[in-house]
Length: 93
Image (cartoon, rainbow, N blue to C red; front, side):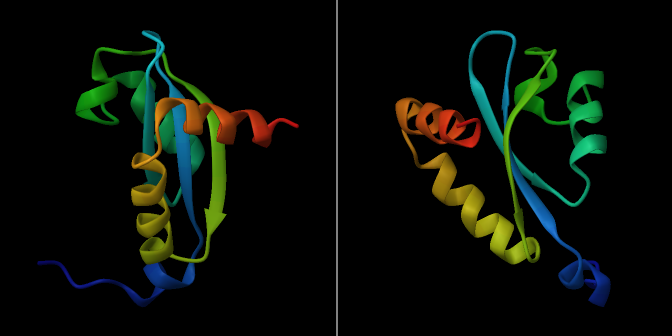
């Protein structure tokens, strides 16, 4: 296992939800949200989004490190589709 760099815990991480072309949602984490969306749209972001592109960034939040972002990602993934929609809608209001 690769050793974590001290900078990895020092820089902020992002939790995000993208909308896929088929109307589904994908939730993930990343230290660089713009690069991650580009990867999803190039087909190299995640197996789930590979054939569901283009994706559109619908929601994001900043967390203080990877650990916090991972915990939040798990919380969001446990939400129902309607609850995720409410979260997304609240982001724009």
